[in-house]
Length: 454
Image (cartoon, rainbow, N blue to C red; front, side, top):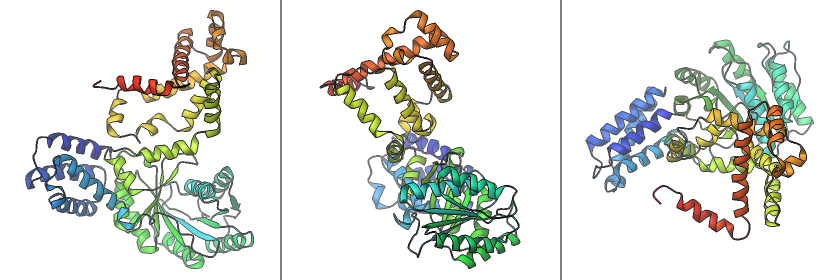
C-alpha cells in the first residue's frame, strides 16, 4: 500500500542526510515529494492539502528543529500525521466494534456492487466467532443480484456461522425484520445484514438502505469500499455518508493495491474510523485495522506485531513443542519433521505477504528474490517428500540413487531437484542438532559472525 510514498520518503532521508537542521527550503522539497506521492496514490486533493499543512506546521516546530537527523525526524512527523489521518487521533478503541446493546447486536453492511461486501460478511462472521466467541447469524437483503442469497449462504456455512434463508421475492425491510426476530428467538449475539449494491450510487438504492436502517436501528453501519478504485471511492463514500449514520469503514482488496489512496480519502471524507482491512481472498483474510501500524508499513517501518499475530494464529504450538521435546530428548530431525516445518511456514501465508510486514531494510534484502519461484519450489519440495515411503521419511539415510530416481518420477521432477531438496534438509538437520544442549548460544554467535560488517 502506498509503495510510491515509501520510496519517495526513503529518497528524502538520503538527500537530507548532510543537512544540519530543518529549514523552510529543505522541508518544502520534502513536502513536494510527499504531495506528489499522495496524489499519485489517488488520495483526494482536500485530504492531501490538509495533510501537507499539518506536516509543515509540526516539522518546523520546536520538537524536531534541534534533531541531529532532520530527514528521519521529518519522516517521524509524516508517520504521526499519516497515522492520525487514518484514524489514530480517534483513540485506541475507535476501530473496535460496539456490542453495548441488547443482543443481537445488528451490523448493517453498505457499499457498491463488486466491492466484496458479501465475502466480507463471511469474513466478519468468522472474525467475530473466533475472536469474540459470538454466535453469529447472517442474512441477505440483496434481492436484485442473481445468486446473492446463495453466495452468502455458501460463505456463511464455510465459516461455521448461521444463515437465515430468504427469497428474492421478499422485501428487504421484511427480510431484516424476520431475521431479527429469528436472531432474538435463537439467542444470537450478532446479526449481520448484507444489503444490495449497485454499479453506481442511485436514489432508489439509498432510500432502500435508509429504510432498512430506520427499521432495525443497527448499532454498527459499516461502509465497505474497494481500496483499488481510487477517486471513485471518494464519491461513493460521500453519498453513503450523507444517506446513513456510518460508524466505520471496511477496506477490501488492500493486498492488491500499491496506491491505497482510498484508505486515506474515505476516512477523511466520512470522519469515521477504518475498522477492518481485507488483506487476502481467504476467509481469514480480514484484519482489525490499526492506523499506527498501517502508517509504519506505509513508511517502510514494517509491521512486526502483525507478523507475530499471524504466527500465533497459524502456527501449531503443540506440534512445535513436540518437535522441541523430541530434539531435547536426543531424537533425530527427519523428513516428516521437515515436511511439518514447510506446512507451518505455508500457514503463515504467502512469502510476499510476510516480507511486506518486515522493515524496509529487510524487504530490500529480499528484493532480488523471485518470490513466486520460491513458493513454487516449496510446493515441489512437499511433492518430493510425499513421493517417499514412510520408512524413507523416517530414515533419510536410506535414500540412495535408485530411491532418488523413483522419488523424482513420482513427484514429476528431475533427480537434481531431489538432491537439492535433500541438501536443504541436511542443512536444517544440522541446525537442529545445534539447538540441543547449549548449542543455541553457539548458533546465535555463529549467525552474529555472519552479519554484514562483522
